[in-house]
Image 1 (cartoon, rainbow, N blue to C red):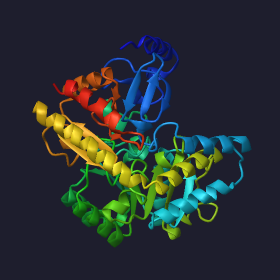
Image 2 (image 1 turned 45 degrees about the vertical axis):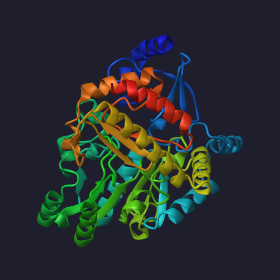
Image 3 (image 1 turned 30 degrees about the vertical axis):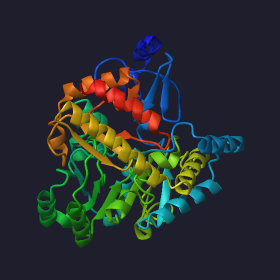
Image 4 (image 1 turned 135 degrees about the vertical axis):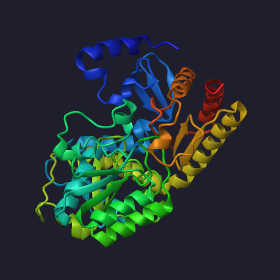
Length: 425
């Protein structure tokens, strides 16, 4: 497989863009080699500038739930584009999106749009602190909530991939009020809440952590979070940027049966365009300006192109029984992986929920970040490159989650099975 044009573009990019990429994990630092450059994408496939095609299990890190360049999304974008790209005043699509989100999630009574997942989680924290008049927050190891200063403490995703789960440039004072605990550790959480619960403004987490691979929550752990935050008057925030409208119409909170106070959204509700959103209880959301004293704003918030694409994607997903179909595809793919692992006898751990999955090169059951760190990274590097050479693209890091789309079918699963046989041999 040739990557001549991609290599040339990367050399040029290195001269003008830090690390040659505009988001760290794209640099392939965790797996070695140079990244390929995409020319186009359609359905379940990415096509690079050298003419290679890949079955795509990254799906632009989650948004392409219908598949790349789906006609419903493209049609909505064409129509919206003719009307204008940005208005600077409210538009009807913002109201329609708000209605769809609130009708889909019982925990969300009011919602505000923004432009990224990072902006959504940042706004949730500011709102929770303003509402409670407290400063301290609790997050969990391996949960990544965007590059918010107060949350880049033992984070996942790109920070973990590069071997530095914290970041330079963040004053110690900014992170001083962030308490970081092991995920799924009920005893550690209970201890903190017992000792200082009345000083905690918010508890934020990915209900299904998807930035240290994929970690499934203990149901009793989540119930404890809900009980203790209610008892202490803290705000429970679910970061559903990855899971919202991907795992179910009502997000992870629908599947897990836990109702948070605030939720952060992104990815799927933009149909592949930059977007974020956050919402929750009306009495908390009404603390936002212009009604309340907590300031949050954005010139492109509720951008008509993003709203049009997101609405079209959600409408199609809901009408076509998308979540049931995604579960069926996910179960079929899990069988492909489990069969390949059984044949090769490799000590691996496979985790899946709905259309999200992760293969860890460790036999350790995965419950938290420390378990994830037992994975054999050298084995993952080999696996990644063999899969890529056989036309299957998985995330270039052991610490990232794979995604499925409605465009993945039997042909793509067959290609994946053949690539797996070679990658796990």
